Amino acid sequence: MSGQILSVAHTGVTVSDLERATAFFRDVLGAKVTEPLMADLPVFEKITGVKDARIKIVFADLPGGHRIELLEYMEPQAKQISNLRPCDPGHMHLSLNVEGIEDIVEQLRRGGFEPVGPVQEVVEHGGIKAIYTVGFDNIFVELMYFPPGVA
Image 1: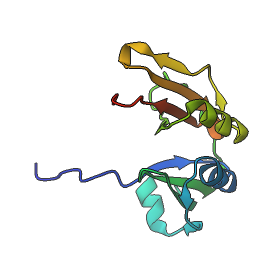
Image 2: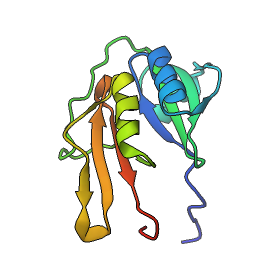
Image 3: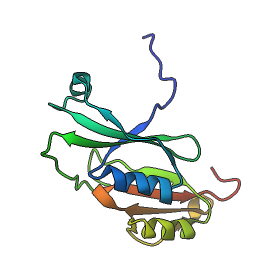
């Protein structure tokens, strides 16, 4: 086989309210965001497999270089919000490497993301700290702190 993966282009997240999602990624997570663009050419139906797809898109560039594509489908109208749990196949989450994890938890809480439990310290792995938070559209954001010298 001659093909190869060169890098991650972006991670896409479908949201119910693009303005709310853009504000969260910009104001709470510190991402640089683009102006919204409309993807309404017939080719997007072919790319996504969604009949009559009309998608409003914003790109959010997070610190560290990871790009999130925020998508709000304007068409079709019939949509459902995922209720997948972290243990359910197909569930995905965004994991962020942070300093001051407790302060970031509070930042996310003010942005509408609630912790699923307290920050956990994994002593067996050098004192790594981690926590899941969940917010709008059942989106999960994990925060992780790696002490110096622990990767």
